Every structure is written in structure tokens, then in C-alpha cells.
Length: 372
Image (cartoon, rainbow, N blue to C red):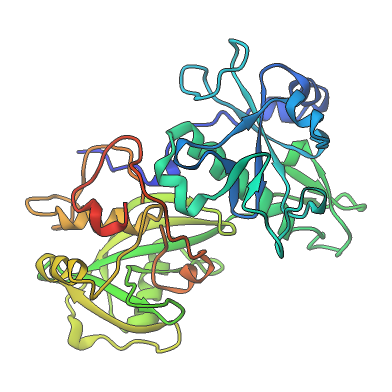
């Protein structure tokens, strides 16, 4: 069976090195070592040289600028042959330093500077699909981990302030209740009808004519497949069967994991009943109809970073395909795509208009439709 393609923010592999982060002295040594490299984070952006990728600083460079490296979170290591960062001929050890609330550098939520130390703040949602595998993996982990602790400041058991331990991977309150970085599961689904047309919807909070596949958060005690069926029924009144896993992608805006599925329905556009709260309009599109609408500007599709664009692109080349029941699988590749599904989970996504340029690896057919 052919492999699934790799979503934009799922590329690369980071050894998160739990062994080291459990030992404070080891992490302290790594912080000051020649192999340490630091990624600066502000909200959903990292310090980067545009499309060329994130900028990584040495400990001495940041110390000279007055940064407190003890506040940095340990991300892990990347094999030297896979890393874009040379670090004294050793395996680089990466840290994230959150400057979101740092008024000393002029970087904060209300008045962010466009640059820091001569480089840009580049939004992960816009640039993630353009960067090399290891770079985007580190940036995604850094943005997610920093966002987690900006939002989890107090113990959910007793309400007392949290103290971060294990270099960013555990926090405890004065009563020793543990708290871990939180990830919220969400499903995103491409629904196909009997004619192999795809269901696309317009979210009430989106501007213009943007359409995407449906998405929503998983509820307490709910299997992922049931969440797919429930969300589709709630948002457009359609019943689905044949729910098949497609792939997953972290979506740290602020803390979701998107789990993607394809599903089938025997119903059609005439059966759609939108909820009119989250979804304003929806319909099934053939490949020809969607291509015509997108090229004519009557509809806009997800951009670089979201797994939604990957799903739609895979369906567009779905002639003579095997997954699922007429949809498509392609060989593993590196794809960059932005934006979310049309359901409630999509409401957390930042605007992310994207930047020009080409990402690394595979360019899928119809890439121009997704703002590459």
C-alpha cells in the first residue's frame, strides 16, 4: 500500500531527549555548550530569515544581548546530518526562548516589532510549509511549548501558580500537583459523495469566499471516528460512513492536534442543512467544478500549512485511486500548505496570508490553487 503524504508541520524528527530533561544538571550543561542553539519565539512566530528558515543563536550570542537563558525550554536534538545548523561538529541541542511578553525587547502581544536582532518575526502558519524538515519541526515544537505555558499559568486542581520544571515539560504548584503541556485533539474530514465529489464549507468567521473541509474538536470520552460523524451531522446535517484515517498534524494555534479522515456519504448537496452558527454555506464539488471556481476566483482554498489543503490536493488527483473508495494516496513527500478546516476547530487558526516561494521536496499538482 502506498505511503501517505507528509503534512507540512509533521515533517522532520526531533529526539526530544527525555533522558536529559529529567536531569537539571545535564540541561544546564547543554544550555552553555557549544552545541546549544536557541530559537526565539513571539506568539505564533519565530525569529527567521524569511523563506530561508529560522535563525538559531548560540548561547554566547544571546548572553551578550542580555537574554536569560535559564528561561529557555529544551526542545531536544537533531541528528547532525539532518540539521541545517552546524554546532561545533556535534549533534546540536535546541532550546526555545519565549519573548512574547518581554517588554525589554519591545516584543509583546499588543505592540510587536516586525524584527528582532535584525531578523523577522515569521509566523509559523505562513512560513512552515517553506522551511526544511528539521527547521519546521523545531519551530512547531517551540511555538507549541511556549503557547502551552503562556496559557497554563495556574494549577487546574487548586488554582495556585505553577512552577515549570524539566526544562519546560512539567509544571507543579506549591501542593505538588503536576501539569503537563496540553494538546487538544481535533478532527478534520473530507467527505465524499457517491459521485466522488468533495464537501467544502464556508465558516461564518471567515472573510471572503474561503472554503475548506469540515473540522471540529473531539469531545470528552469520544472516539475520533465518532467525532467525525458527529461534527459532520451537527454542521451540515449529513450522515457519513466509511471513516478512514488519512494523517495527522500538530496545529499549535494555540494547541491542537489535527487528525485527518476521509469519509463517505450517500447524501448530496440537496440534503445539506447548515447549522448557520459556525457554517454559513456548504456544498459538494466535482473536480472540474472546484478547479473552475478556484481559478475564476469564486472560491478560495486553504493555503500552505494546513492539512486541509493536502487533503483537497490529494482528492484533486484522485482518478484511479485506492484510498478511501475513490479518494487518493500519494507516495510520501514533503508538502507545504495555511489554514484550517471549516468547523469549530478552525476558529482558533490565525489569518496567515502566507508568503511566496517554494518549499522543500514534493510539489503536488494544482499547487497554485493553495497560494504556494
